[in-house]
Length: 234
Image (cartoon, rainbow, N blue to C red):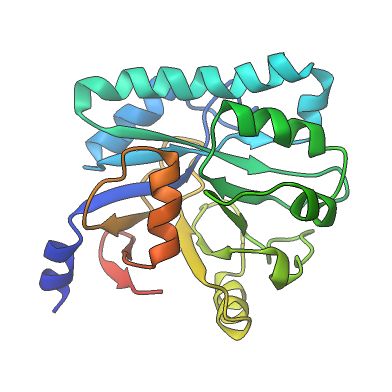
């Protein structure tokens, strides 16, 4: 059965990864990240760099450019490996330290997101339409996080497999099912060598861009590979 599932969903994508300098907490340049995932046999990786109150020290153009330049560098590096790099973001509002993963992102949306960093998640979800994107809470049970109202979410990162954080993945998974959240994902939350490839989204066909990836997540037609050995069908 497992081999049949792997054959049905042959493409592997990392949904949660950070690069420097766009994410100050990362120790990986975009080119290094891409190489590490190529060596793990991945077909794609989403660059989900932090977009948080620290970026308000830059003007909008500079802040957006910082994220885009890491994405562009990763995308260029991926060409020689025939990998696909997707633009995502890990957004944080000034109200607390919650993080939200957004898939289906472009430069125009990043400019809008910047304007809402000083606000809160309720204001953002009320005022910003994301018809072609998905909005998920990242690692919601990690220390210091506050559970977002499930009605504001398209889904949740149930399995955050960052090796140096306890994200209480069992509680996150249980909560996502209790609230009947449509999208449930897993991510490696890669910041450094050794973090890469803890999990992979496996799909039938490789999305062409960030918005196609968001649409794939909406369909639910995928599985997750965990630790290179186990499968999770959310």
